[in-house]
Image (cartoon, rainbow, N blue to C red):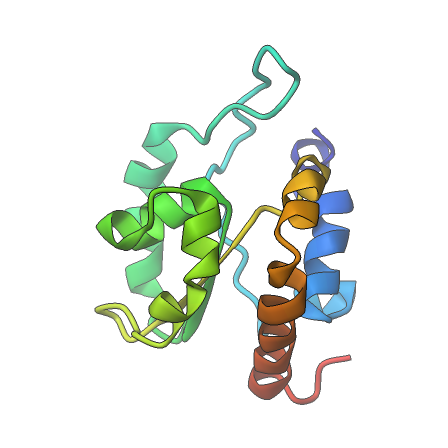
Length: 159
């Protein structure tokens, strides 16, 4: 709801965790010369019975995503955050679960997509995924150092 109310993507604890994973400052993260932040839903979908966010609305993909990405050929890396982004960007290449998809991140990263973009699947940085992070320590031990190294290579002058 904070993101919805401010209109700023990842303007919440999830964003704090994501910026920590990337090893970038808030200022760098919101600099459009560095990052293009393209949410799966361009509107807040509401809450489910448990108080979690509902899935992104289908029309967001159809109306926006299919039009936006062709307009940005300069994008070389797409960090797909969470299962909905993974489903959209990886399609049939995605594994059966988010865990398996993230575990095999090199399969997607090392083989650029049809537009020459490298895809890096990661879990959503929400606090709701803290249990997932504890059950999958390889994410922080193996993938995050590579993500931070890649961020530093792409943007050597970031703070």
